Length: 581
Image (cartoon, rainbow, N blue to C red; front, side, top):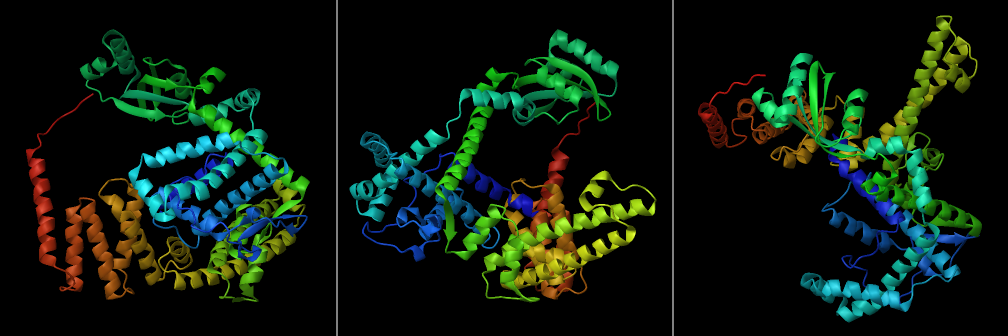
């Protein structure tokens, strides 16, 4: 459920990463730049992070990452996606770490530009500034906002926009210099990755008809060749099933090959698939048959961007190594989440030392570090679980007088049963210790952040029989999915999971009366949204049994009866139809 509800999170994070690194996201006029005086001086201690050379901080504040740089961009990013807020423990620090990483990269780029005297011309700056100013003048709302914020358009242009454009164009010039990808490099990538690119980008729009026998399917093909696909389907009384934007891998290889090699308008088949004989008509086709087709597709720009990113990242790493540049952090939360983003080794151990004194949780540490510890614990526990399973497999082979799997021997060495048992016992003990620490952190977070979707999910996994946690978990999911119920944009299986979870809470003998009533009400509300008045009436009956004064039952029953009557009238007015093949 969390994966479904938070799908956009990954979209945002990786869209920012790709766009920033490719040099395509710049500070735009829609962003409310911090209104500060040009003569204000900042100290290194005020920064979140900064660039060091030979271990010493660079004196120029250009190379310091200030809090408002991250916070302003973060706020405007959420606004552009029409998102009110992210989870403060698991989502916000991760996204801010990504934003900080990109800003730090850009500061290294500016250092390179200064060192190599790379800068835009006055003409280039003026041209870009004039373009932006003209855009603002054409939008009265934007013009009014800028005048309110900066006093006048000329002040905004001179003191805010022009310096901003200068930085943007400087970074762009550097990236164009160090990240240029040639046509030969793109062609080589296409040739080496053609099959993977086809799986990712090839598309066909098709229509299908199905039959119980091969002979009937062959008869359809013969008829379609005479009168056309649609006419043949109509005359044989078969339903045409459309498949729009179909990708490779949906059908078996034989069907895939036929569909993606056919020209638009072709009829292919019959193929035996899912106990039916299928005939397809290919309506449109977009296939990366050769480099020319690839060059004229969306895949080309995607690959070009990917290669530019890789080249830029490689250059950045080499330049920082040559100049002995690195990042230093003043903000501990940002530092640890940035290291998590960079997959730094032994981050779990360092965090454990911060969060625990012996077996006791140090509650004074930042809660964003506690949430990170939970994520790292997950990875550690999963790895230990895998190792324990492998050693169990190793032991089973020895018990049966068989040679253990070659990969297991390579990983663990030659072991006796006793040695396997000792190793397993050690890992199980370590796993139990990790689980205990994770539980302590999750329990603390649940106590302080009971409405966090992530915290609720972790708490429910650890305490599935705690009725209060279970209620809060499903109530939270109910609140998240409620806006989507009336539009039909939901996964039925996930909706069923929420309904079942709330129903078990409503019927739990250890649940308080208020929890049971609330659970039944949510079930009633969901049933109405799903146009299921029969279930809604049942939940009303159950609520009334528990507390006759809980709500205005008369109005609720009237609403349910009205829906039932409307459904009945609709059924009676709909003529019965029969279909055949």
